[in-house]
Image (tube, rainbow, N blue to C red; front, side, top):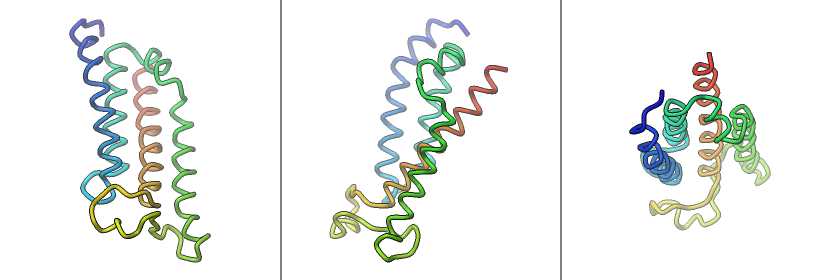
Length: 137
């Protein structure tokens, strides 16, 4: 689609959507949001870019094969689970670097955030793979 309005709007909307997806990711393990919803928002921003331009231009702008993100995301999820095993706890046990802040609602780094990051990457990879294949057909 060749629309000047859409090309101009995507320059403004896409960074806002990507920033909002990171906000949802970081906020998600304490409040509504998380890796899945954040990944959908990020993929939606790239889907809008693909609609404004075309799928090959979106693939080129993305610079990474979305299927690689699926593997990286699953690897990050696995690492977040193995961290509990290495500490002598169950697989996917929640562990935090600063546990005194874990219940306060602040952003704390721990295995739930790492897990959500893996889900984020996997969801972006799966959705973009589907969108790019469908749009190229």
